[in-house]
Amino acid sequence: MFGFIWGLTARTHYALRKFMPTNIALDAIHRRRGLKWGVPAMLIAVPYLLAAVFCIGLAQDGRSGWLNLLAVLFVWNALKFIIAGPATLARLIVTRHREALARRVSAAEPRGIAGSDRVERPARAFARS
Image 1 (cartoon, rainbow, N blue to C red):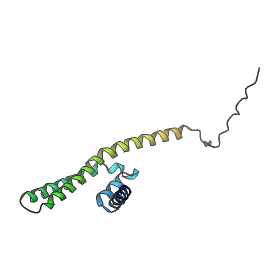
Image 2: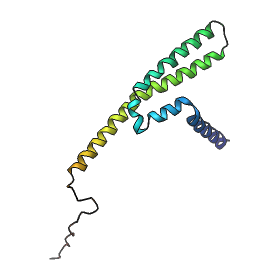
Image 3: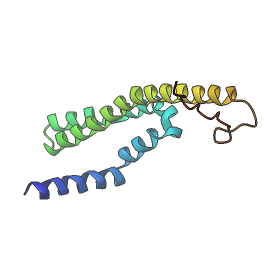
């Protein structure tokens, strides 16, 4: 029974990762080319929060209670984008630091000598006295 629930949860997770628009956008933002768009993508949370407030207002006016569930979905999507901004900014800083370090290391290597072409000195054998 546990294995069935685990498998169903995993399949649902991957189906939602693949087909839901917010997850597709977040996956694109978390790639190397999309890291720079993490902070501007936080602005996408604003329409989601406005839609949540609208749905809550309609539900409080006596409309369907299902609008509360829709409001929770909107708030959840807004939180995903709000959290993605600082997370991608931190990853972008770390990635650019590593790239700059790699550029400095590659610039410090002598030209014409690749790492595999270097001639190493043979190790001295220890002589017994």
